[in-house]
Length: 298
Length: 266
Image 1 (cartoon, rainbow over the protein chains, first blue to last red):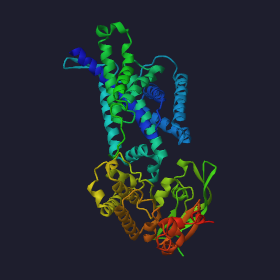
Image 2: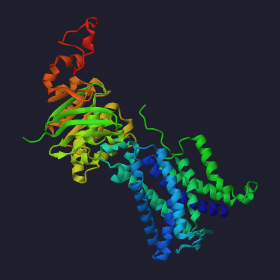
Image 3: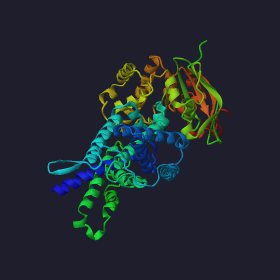
Image 4: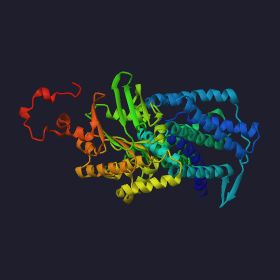
């Protein structure tokens, strides 16, 4: 039982990271109809920026986290403003290719600036743990779960009640009718990119503060968050969070019981679990767990 | 003399760099009046509205000549958000309500360009007074409203921007005769409360009954204009839109082909 709970906890922490990244995917997909393949690059960039703030500039870790989210948001919005704005009204496929291009630009850029070596971000959590109820909790995992919960809550309040959030929802639904209400689509797109980049950066710095440390390959986690987004239903923020948690849990549990149950499948079976889960769920519900089917009068 | 609310002069609009849809169109909407814009499908009515509101860009359209003025201000090819802020709201063809969100949220979206909460609340009360149906269904998802209710919502949403000029694109489209009457009365009421109206309609009788003046469009040009009463009495208009000339029913056998093929500009 203890092992099970311990694995669940690890899964929740991992799932929170996935949820943040998947939420970023959904924000951009919903408002612009484009899957942003550069999400992993933005995540890595955010993590390295956080490293610079925390280690080189020696600001307090909390401030570094905040700064890395803000600067990643600026990068996202700037990229939208300079490049993607010219692509409004063009086929989504062309825009998707551009985001893939951005990913391939970001990766060498990051290694050119920060190099390939393994880095440790100065942070107050490290590998410290607390014990409660006979379980061992990593401090960083607790913070990851807590911060994710807070961010997700803020995210939903923003979309539900703020006027900009409403503008983003209606632009996603019918861009032209939204324009006719005087809603600036450009502003909505820029804000979506800023939000997505900030979410990715937060996920990045939270991961980099963990035992894995910081390497250029940190962005690969976005690939595992991708099934989380699809599994939740591409256009559902709640689905993205749910999908992230499910996939995190599944991955952590598989890893935890690998020796006993999956030894025949090799060491890294937990890595493919997200994709297997995605395929199975899509077979049963093609629009994902919480993806919208059209609202229609009958 | 004060400038008219809206004046469009010599407007030319081209889609995709090649398709010339408006060919030097001019019209005026005097302050506090209702102006009807009639014309067959493809005559350029919706394009004119798009040119006024700045919504040509998503359709790859462009104003190549002419000007659009709102009062004293030149709004030719202005940004859609600017146009709304300057006081033009529109009800798009086919209603285009945001089906996934509630009636209340639709109305809030209509007030996006306004900042003062008190003023928004005032408009909100006014809209609910005007449309009691919406007041009853404030919390329902807009997609589940009936067609008539959705049209009311679309009009209410446009009013939330507190427009000086309201553009209505086929508000009677697909509505039962009773509802068409209701929409007509509401347009009159909105006009009396101090909003100028440009009404695009296929339902010529309905439009001309309430309008002060009217324009007839064909292939991107104004081919006839005048006071609404005159247009309503015009024989050609009666034949093209009301299906009869001179009040008597005519047999199709007697209809001469050259008359059927008649065009306004010919």
